[in-house]
Image 1 (tube, one colour):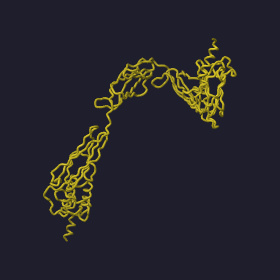
Image 2 (cartoon, one colour):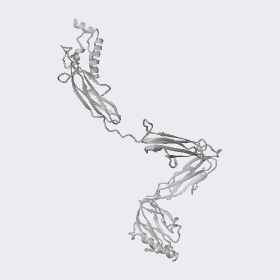
Image 3 (cartoon, helix red, strand yellow):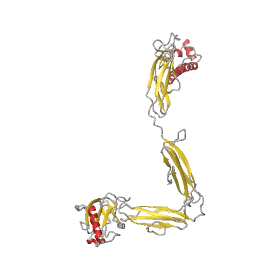
Length: 513
């Protein structure tokens, strides 16, 4: 069988597998690709189109110059970065297929670039781009984006030792890049066709710009660098260190994760690369701190190589990662007991002592608090002794180290005088009154049958007014400590005493006259 006959048989099989769908109705625009016997290029291709419904004509026939039955495909690239991937075209055509090499299909194009090629082995030079504009009639007025990078061997000061290579990149999402230009040290722009090497000793500036197919020119960019003479040969390897950081338990193990940070320096030709491996694995380029979260013991080996090729001795850090503790979400358990001498009615004689306990099986108890009657929350450090007569409520709660707070609880009890009434002719007015001023503070029994008014004794003799005020402060201090008065209530009483004229001798003299 001849080669031509073998190709014809192969084509019939491929055509049966890839036969194009029936030709749809013609869309708003028609784009035509053709091919002939040449395997290095398409015979004709469209360069630009507008977005929207499009009829594609793909012809590889005797009419387009294919005299040998050479098969070709029209295939749209759906994987290469930088191109649109939303259209699938993959049609095999030859003069011997059922359509005699002419195929038609309809697609919808979107703004951007499409890459097309022939997928038959050996036809890789048959490739091109189709630029699609927005189709709204608007002209491309946005210039290309252009940038450049400089590479080469550098010393510790950042200077290039020997040649420096400038690589320019440009892109344009509209009409596409038409040309890129560059100039070295203001010597005049010329076409950029590939990376530019600069080797002259001294300071240099390379400018660059790009123009798109619509004629828009980018802003001129530039890169500056210095080239110096090579120095004496560097034979000293870099210095490299490793540091492990993270949250640690009392045994020194890292909780949850450990982070290994490597640092390398080289005073000669400069550091070229740093490498590491974990637990005997392959060496990997170090670009950022290494985070290890696998539970267990680990070893991280590391080394550094300078530009001259000197490699440091291999070093190592070792550590152990343990799992983080289970999060504590349970509040402490709390309880309280009241103790003291009690009468037949269950009331406590003279004093009642409230003892608060809290336990936490998770993170542990952080604080215990209590509040007496309407008072503020106070840190609990020892049993609370209450001596003020009357009914009382002690509220209590606890918080653990994880921040969980138990619900408020309380105990209630009553304190009565232990026996003998120290003030049988007690001042039983409802509120504390000093002189003519009613403080509004309840005139409570202080625990031995005496009220606050009894203790203040405003009708007693005092050498002067200051002595009376100091007396009021002295008798109310124990009442605050015992919970009968709040600090605010004590302040109201003392200020009322200070405003009174009790102990003022001129007042007494006036009264006598």
